[in-house]
Image (cartoon, rainbow, N blue to C red):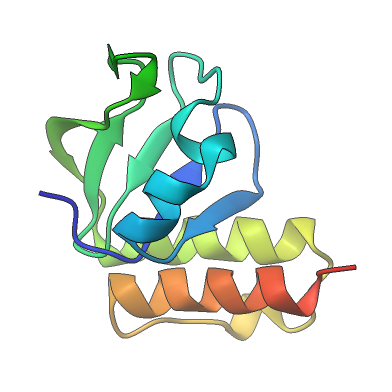
Length: 114
């Protein structure tokens, strides 16, 4: 079971996609119908890693891999994301929890919206 919020980490990309809740995953066809590649991952608020290539009725069904990212790895991923968006003071950024890291990603998406 996915613990929200979550992010999508695209293979070979530093920028992340924020997914605040299951309702957004279901309602946003760009998320659950996207043509994901091997290596694209959904990572939930506990660090659980889901692959994104299983389909049911043409919709992507995240599949738990049995693996987790720890807080240090998530902090690194969030820093890479912030760096891609030219955020300042990235080196000083740190998180107290994985969920906090994903919320920071969500805030950067809002801050950088056109």
